Length: 402
Ligand code: F3S
Image (cartoon, rainbow, N blue to C red; front, side):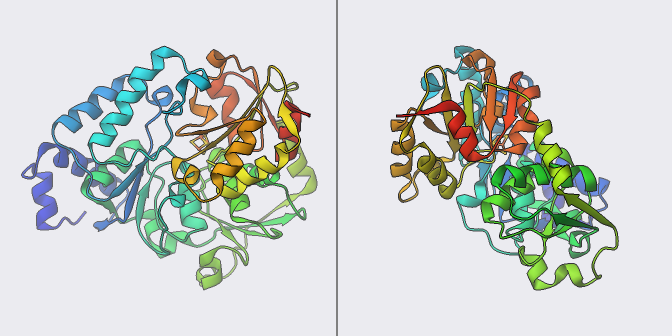
C-alpha cells in the first residue's frame, strides 16, 4: 500500500509509539485487502466497550495505549457498555462488573473518544452522503452505508480504534463505488410489515445473501426505524454491510445500482418464509422483561412505547426496559415520553442494552422484544429465553390495564 512521507514516519515510530501501533494495524489491514492507499475519515465508531464481551485481557492493552499518550485524530464515539452509568443500581448490575467496566469507559475517554455509549451514533451528529467513516458495530455500519449513503467497511474494535487515532482508513471494499453495486435482487411479496417483521425480514435476507449486497424490492412505506431494524437483522444473520431498497435508499435514488443493471440473481421472500422466521424466534412463553431498543431507540420509537403504556402499568414481577442514547434522552419532548413510561413502571436506560448486560444475574429468565437482532443474540449472550413480538404485543405481555 502506498504511504505518504508523513504516514511512513508514523509507521517508523517517529511520531510516537501509540501512533506507530495504530498505523501498523491499518497498514496490515490495507495490505491484506489490497488497498491502494489510506484515505481520511470523518468519524470513527468503536466497539469493544462492554466488559461482558471484552473481558479483562484487553483492558491493560487499552490502558497502556492511553499511558503512551494516545489521542484521537477525528470525531470518535463508543458503542454501549454493560449498564446505565447513572443508574446501575436500578438495573440490578452486579458489583463485580462495575469497576472493570468503568475502567474501560474511562480509558477510552482519556483518549478523547466521546463516551456516547450507543449503537446509533448517527443520531448524534448529522452525517453527509458520501463521507468516509471507520465504524464498528454491524447495525450502524449497515445503516450508515445503506440509509445515509456514507462509506464504511465492517470494522472491528482494533481497526476502528486505530482509525480513530490516525484519522484514516485503508481505501478498499465499501469505500469504492464498484463494491457498492447490488449483487442479488431480493423480491419481498408480503405487503405492509410491522417493526418486528422488518427485523425478521432482515434476518432472512442475511441468511439468503450472506455477504453480498442485496437490492430489496417490494417494501411498503418503510420508515427509517423499519430500515434500521431490517439492516440490523441482515448484519446479525449474515455478513451484510449494505443494502439498497428500491425507491427508498439514497444510492438507489441517485441511480448508482443501475449502472450495471438490475442483478439477475433473484431470491423471493413470501409470507410463509417470513412467518416461519418470526415463529422460530417466538417459542418462549411468559416473558418477565419486555425490551425495546436494539438498535438503540429513536425519539419516535420511545414515543411509540409511551403511547402503548398509556392506561396500563407494568405487572408485578415484570419489567419493561427501553434502551437509547443520552443524546436522544436530551432531545426535545423525550423527557415527556420517558416520564410516561416510567410512571407506568417501565425504565428508560441509556449507555447500554440488554444483550451486553447480565440478565440472569438480574433475575430475568425470559425476554420479549420487538427486535429480531436482539432475539437472535439474547439466548446465547444472556442464557435466557426469548420471544420476538410486535411492539404492542410485547408491551401488553408485561403490563396490565389500570
Ligand atoms: Fe445495539 Fe445492543 Fe442491539 S449494542 S444493536 S442494542 S445488541
